[in-house]
Length: 213
Image (cartoon, rainbow, N blue to C red; front, side, top):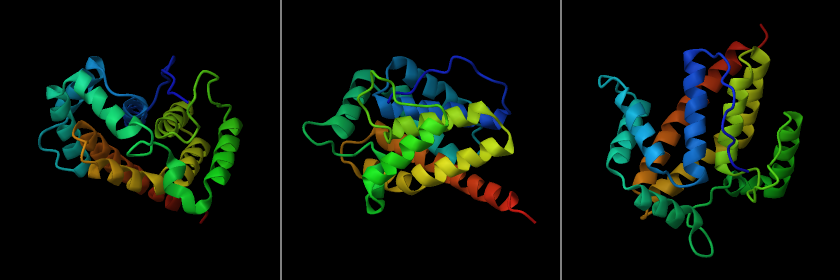
């Protein structure tokens, strides 16, 4: 499954638009190595963060922007191949069920496919990637954010995030950051971790606020 470009951009609150755009960017970076246009986009986005902002997320954005500003597109693309493609078995798996093996990978894939079908989503016929590819999961989150801002849609986001992303992103990011081949992608993983840490906290707060009183 590969991330589809957004053909329409519904009106969203600034925070949700930023969330959707970041999920889309991460999906793009984990689907294939960056080209010059993607690196320039990251550099520009990082420059827009106020320098006085000191959160882990802001620091990770600035570090990735700095790496993007000096990165050679061909080298960054090769780094992606070295870490996530490799010869034979990839050094770091891009598939969420790899990090959820204790639950039963096939059972999780069946559940994921059922969830996607209920949303009206499916893998493109031309795609050879299974549905648990990290890029595909991030693109589903982008879709859910853009679809609707109502409480029911937020519940869908929380359920999908909790089931398929929350328990897999930490070990995935750790594996990338510990790779001796990761330079640019170590920064991508750091941003991924910082962003999803914020998402995890926000999902928990939403769950508390939405409980019946």
